[in-house]
Image 1 (cartoon, rainbow, N blue to C red):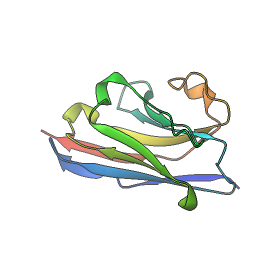
Image 2: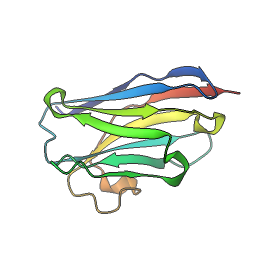
Image 3: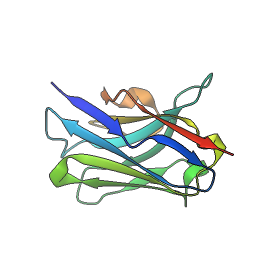
Image 4: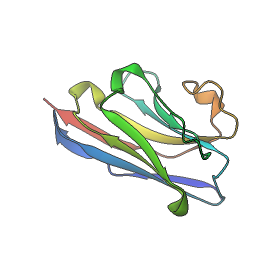
Length: 125
């Protein structure tokens, strides 16, 4: 059974940092792209970042997090991370990890096959 489990969310003041983790199990994700999405109350799910699971480690970010967030992966641990720095109140959302086999449009949720249940990130002003 494939599982993606997020952790690392919490409450932080504006300007602070958090590191989210996504532990994948049930299969080897060596050929999957891994993404992070977020969803704030009353809003649609929004793409945050993606990393390819190939040796190239190509990464993509939505404009609002460029320079502040960094996505990375540890192949040996089958885990993907999202380092979030300089957090802002508008970053408050539930953050979801997702895996896709053939992702050509990273910002489209339909491109991803597996999803975690999410972890809450709250940034206070």
